[in-house]
Amino acid sequence: MGYVSAVPVPQPRAQSAAPSSASDIGRRSLVVALLLGAVGAAVILLTSGQTWAEGTADVGGGTLALDAEGRDVTGVPTALAIVGLAALVAVFAVRRAGRMLVSALLALSGAGAAVAAFRGAYDSAALDQQAARTSGNTSATIDALTHTAWPFVTAAAGVLILLAGLLALRYGRSWPSMSGRYEREASPRDRKPRAAAPERPEELWKALDRGEDPTTDG
Image 1 (cartoon, rainbow, N blue to C red):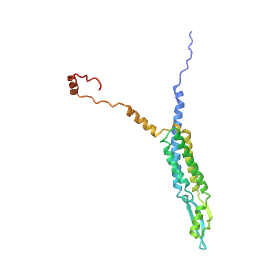
Image 2: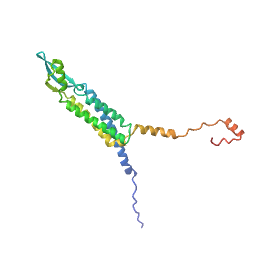
Image 3: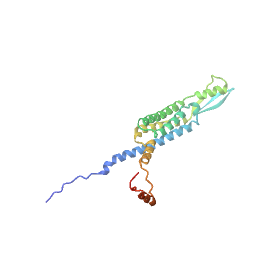
Image 4: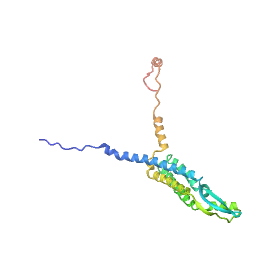
């Protein structure tokens, strides 16, 4: 009675699972980073026109209600949001070390916007200036100062840009590059020889009459 030894069978699916999983993570991180960066920048640009602070100023024996928009309190979040958008696009235009530098700029833009917005939530300088202009007294200050939730919304949007930059730093090396894609599309086209147009029968006969071999190139 013979014995049959068990031979292990290779599992190609298990071997290819790791690269496939890494590719899926790279694609997901790309989509998430684009979404976070775009939404964060859009929210900052929108909230810069919202009322951040409110208060009253003494004018002519009475009180006048004043308010300040986000762009009046601080223009830093708006400027950094624009820088972040530019960096988000530039991430796909560069590769290797350049991509890491742009990703770091994206993250720093989000962090700076968040910090500036959070500090602006407790700043009264913009309303103090309005109070001084309105009352004609340079030493006048705002009374009953209150802040809305918009500065904190702006700070949260800055955190979204920061997260997009961190994702780019972590997974950006596996993301596609615009320049690389164009090179891959163009290079086969450049290397591919142009097909010669088929000669007409009468041209072949003329070559034979001249003693030439029409089957040879050039």
